[in-house]
Image (tube, rainbow, N blue to C red; front, side):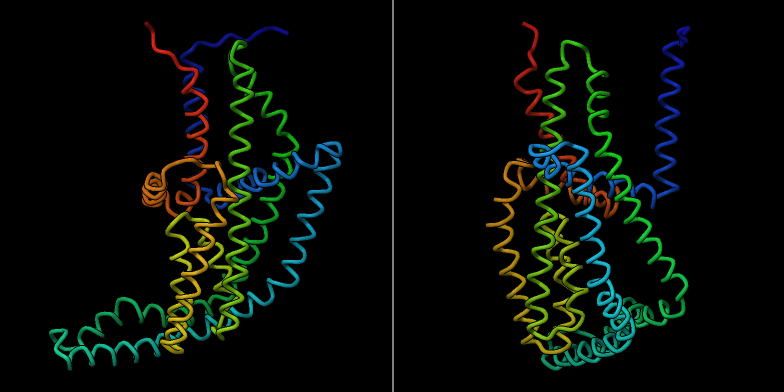
Length: 350
């Protein structure tokens, strides 16, 4: 076999072209990119239980058993949860015009009360018209817009199922080839640093796996608690709101409050007292989970100051949208692992 010699310039151009292709892939195929990110996250989550299972069985057997568990849980979710979620979403979409009208009436009464007490200047109807034109009119038209696009809704559901299955497929192959990726990473480092590089790989994998697994547990826990108290208080669309709260909780610090706004707003249309109770339950849940459960589950997975985490989440959200907000903390976790790896090893020349 003859060696093919290339210049450094050709190598740089090839690397630049590869990076350009990856950026184009991310720009023009966002669904494929999100599928890759979701599959990678799932593989990282499953790597921790897979490592535990490898202590009592072979890796191939552990991977097959773990995949069967994931597929069974997915089948149970699709058969039990998805029909109820679809029904509640359909009801919510149909009720949006009524909710918008109720909000309009309550806001009108509130503004007129403020005007009667001299707390606002100008005509309350003009203020209401501005709010209505900018927000409530759009909200009231959502139901008819979605209802007139049934085929688009079906395509969205099919796309979601494809993305879920594709993410599982990617996660399985990443788990199967994880030893190969580790070996490739080690071969890319100098011979004298390979032992340390192996430690860096293992530490980063453990940190990410611990973070994503704890994030999943916390999201499911908050969704279950929210569904319980929303159902007991008689707030409609409780399952949809609970899933939304669990999903939003994956965004650190601000996500839980973003998730709590819709159920509180809908409860306020029923009764201000119910909305106050929902707010109290939500505040108690976030306080207990955020201060007692989250630190115990995540442990030392992040070890970054909360102010840095918050600023990173906000900045990533401005630059890359929701995906950036979700990936900000894992990037910080990896950065912390790299910092801890390099800090005792770097030496300044004397």
